[in-house]
Image 1 (cartoon, rainbow, N blue to C red):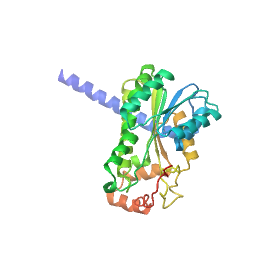
Image 2 (cartoon, one colour):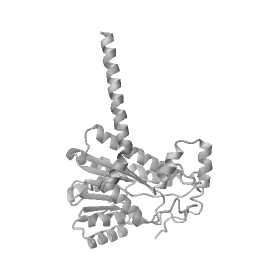
Image 3 (cartoon, helix red, strand yellow):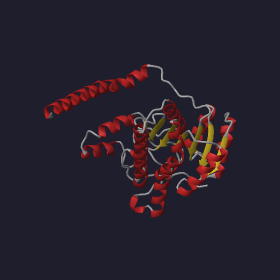
Image 4 (cartoon, rainbow, N blue to C red):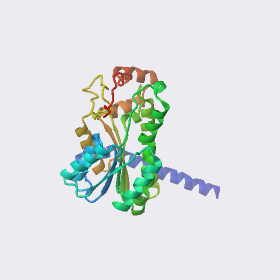
Length: 314
């Protein structure tokens, strides 16, 4: 009896190992196949797209792009004037349904309250884009506790509350998409960005885990996309510099949004910008700490924030 059980276990091991080896070879070359074949892009016409931090920067630009594609827009921002301007712009670009709401995404109760308004007045959100973000731009030891808490609340915890509010309806219909605008600073520590890096590391971990939960629950129609860009020239990181801009350029907003929209429409799980960062992060995981520090110094990673100014306050 024990011998028979042992034989079955051994056979299962062999079969599963063969399956993994065959699929590993396929997945290894899958990017090449996808690059050669015409990519299928999903139709977002009629989808209800909610964008947090829609009042400026890439949030505003993404709203315009979704308007051009026929989506209904739900715009959230704490800045009423900026949000109204985005609402005006998306109408100019063909949006038929636009709803703007003032919402402080760092406040859990406010997120739930405004989310209930959206459900009653607009309907179930089918594409949720967690884009709102802030940066302190101070050394950790110099960062006021209130700003550290605010950074974590906006850049990370807000993702928990928006997903709690809108994910159940996506799961019920097995249709939806959650997009997390994170950062390359959520994949590697950056000098002068301790609280920001921590918040983005957490946002990436959260989004990745939610994606795995959807797969485990059989909700394959609920997609996730995690976006990890280098600095984007929106004003948020004014004063930051790149030592070798040809290798690691500060991204223009229009370019970044084009790549983000492409990733969403192709239902790409991870997007890192620029492409050179794929190499950087790949090498980082294979080298010693001291070699990593040497290369980090070479690329200027310890001095990105030396001349940080940030977005000007109105």
